[in-house]
Length: 169
Ligand SMILES: [Zn+2]
Image 1 (cartoon, rainbow, N blue to C red):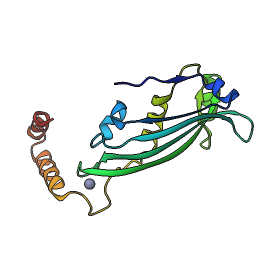
Image 2 (image 1 turned 90 degrees about the vertical axis):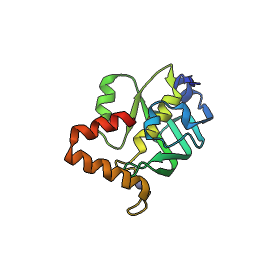
Image 3 (image 1 turned 135 degrees about the horizontal axis):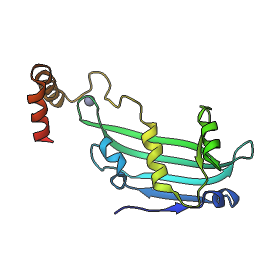
Image 4 (image 1 turned 60 degrees about the vertical axis):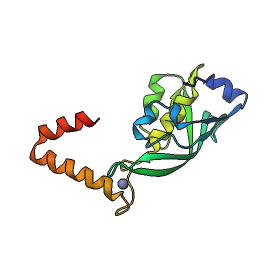
C-alpha cells in the first residue's frame, strides 16, 4: 500500500499546524535498496512555524529504528533514526538556488500539495552517512567470506564473475 498524504505548506505555517504520523519502512520505495528487511516503524511529526527570522519553515522530526544492509558484508545493520530538519519555504527556483549556496539552510519550494511521506523519505536517505557499515571487525564473517570470493573472482575473471552475480540477483 502506498501512502499519499499531502499538505499545503503555507497553510501549515500560517496556522501553526502539526501532523503526527507513523509509517512502516516497507512503504518507502526509494528506501528499499538500503533496507535489510522491513522491520520497525517510524514516527514522524511535520509542523509549520516561523523561524527566528520570521521566515516560513516546515519542521520535520523523524524517530525510529530500521534495519539497514551493511555495505561491506550485506548483513543486518540496526540503525536508529533521530532526525530533526527545518526546511525554509521559498517561492521560486531562484530563491532555492540562492539558499543552496548557504550550507546552514535547507530550503524547499512552497507547495499546496507537499508530499509528506516523500519528504520524510528524503530526509532519511539524506541522513545516511557515506559508509553504512558495521564497525571494523563486526561484520558477519560468513557473508563477508562470500563477498571476498566474489571479489577474488572479479579480479581474476571479471566477466565470468559478473555473469555469476547476475544469475544470483
Ligand atoms: Zn558488515
